[in-house]
Length: 125
Image 1 (tube, rainbow, N blue to C red):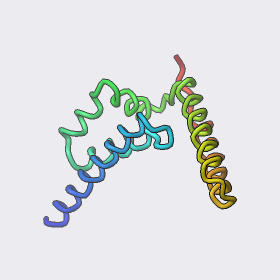
Image 2 (image 1 turned 45 degrees about the horizontal axis):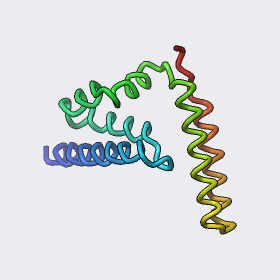
Image 3 (image 1 turned 45 degrees about the vertical axis):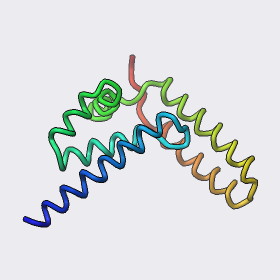
């Protein structure tokens, strides 16, 4: 019984941490909002029905979760904006840091994230 209680608390903490990271990601282009919100929903679904319902019914975060769960994908405009801001912020980081290892790392991350974003289904309007 104690193990279940600890697991629930861990899911709650991870859910809130993810949601806060997602909220910060709304304002910082390097931090993606959607994956953190989806992780928060998953954690809340395993720990708190109240928080899960609140999150899925939230006016801003709810549609992200519902689109993902339904498999309809994301709007093309959202995907393109995410890719644009990601590459702009990575380009700025490459210029500021100006180290070969950091440039290579950022380019690899950027290419991988772009592939992932291009593979996500586009939501039909």
